[in-house]
Length: 341
Image (cartoon, rainbow, N blue to C red; front, side, top):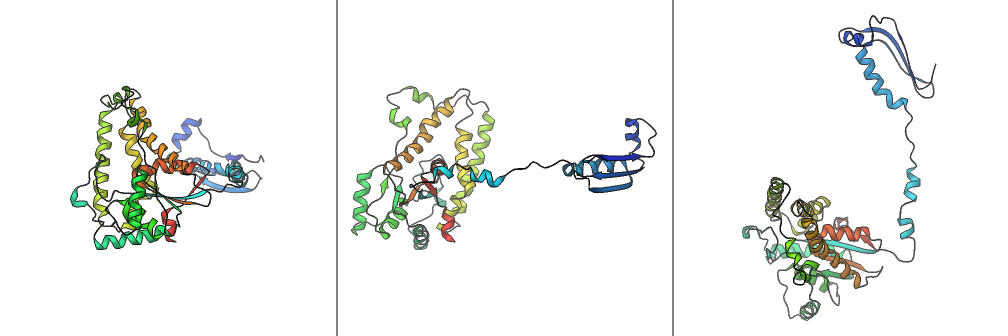
């Protein structure tokens, strides 16, 4: 007996192998098969079994006959990069990334929400829901709030008026959530960290930048049209769904990983697919660059390990901002839904 092998004894084999295989479709052969595993233990004995069934048994039992690969998962876990990066005095700063839709509906993005689908954030019911959302966010206990504005002096002045009772909150999410939460938590200021991208800053100096926006030579125009149509359907459906959800539910839906990933997917489906590198070049000095600059602006404020920062930006920014904060050992992302537990 040889361990790990199939032992077989056939009593009737009238033809060569090919003929026997065809004949076996209609007949069973008297056979006595004994299977052994690698330790010599008998694991199957079959009598009077058809050739097809024998073959099926062989392939079914093959994994049992071949020793499994051994992986020391505990050891691999102990060798993760954070064993070094996070083993020191500097602990990660906790960050809550809060992606939002624009409460005032400026319709400056590619998709324009129909006015019939606008959410009236100033209505009594929505005001109640916004406060409920704010109460959940405050459980994070943010020490700093970063918003989608690039004008710090204007922000400081308006926030000062609000804290002095001279300004009533407008529709914009900066006011309804940013000012509301900062004011209720007695923050001295909010941080304006939005910025223009490289493409906008230098388009007058470098005339070649304009040529990057020419997408007249797609490799597959049908592909572009297909995905533009699908994303248009998704946005339109989203506008309708938003009106049926509470503000908290809307923000939880926007924070879902699949939502964030697919929102970014439209840039990949629409901005690329060019015969030259115009698509990716334009994307890198425009959208990617803007979000990297936003991340850099946050870093320049020097958040400490003791800080807990809230970043309130349009949800389209979240895929790239999330990538930055998730990858950097300086930060630890806190999920919105974790505040409900």
